[in-house]
Length: 361
Image (cartoon, rainbow, N blue to C red; front, side):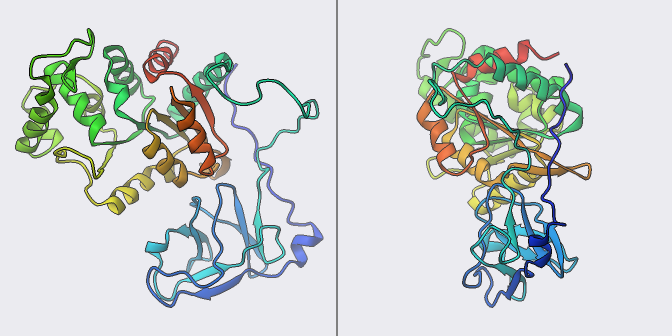
């Protein structure tokens, strides 16, 4: 059965309530980076604003942003730091249309009258049955390969295992990866695995620790910094496989955000957190599916930048978010941060990647 994008059900703006609602109130920014009092903060859902008698969908959007009216009479959502003096910000704290602001939380909702108020195992845990989730994901990725933009958010655990490195590299080769968001650790240990066969000094297949193996990732970082870039490191011929190698070989964007705990770091890592955020948002804005693997901080960061909807080929459609981790706490933390429309799978990422690769052509 081929995958089909669910139809979007927009609000009925012909309803008298919407027609009689006032225009949204606009207040000019008086100081760069500072929103006016009573600014409206955006959610993960589609939000409409009444401007000159017309309801306009904000796009591109994100959670905890500020809606700004552009010169083209569109509404875009900006971070506080990107606000500029003279821009017109929408103010108001209601969401029901009474102030010209309407949050539409049921655009992709399906009515299910058969759900009981009480039911066992309604949460998501290591005891949850995930077969259907996997099959849904396979169908989704087959569709998104040619019709969407699949962004992967990776923690270092994805490259600590021989089979998972191969699986993810194969998924890149097959066309199921359109951008990668990660940190210094993932790329460092992937390259360590490619050149030295270890991750943090431990053999990625046998798990045996190597003599002086704790130097391996530092030696790798030094090699990369001497080369000047990941591309130039690969040109030396020392790197012939792996996630970073395959991504660069296929011109897949690789956004590496730095951390205060980083060693090195690699020459391609963004040391400025806001430059990293800007570059990550380039891809979360284009994303139609986001897959987060074993990284709490990067998953929360990317999830906060990613709403439940996007406009693709002129159509409003859902934006799918999957998060995979062995720790239930990490997945619940992501949901608690506001990314409610998310499918979580509690398993180790090595098994997840191997399963996904085996089931995709």
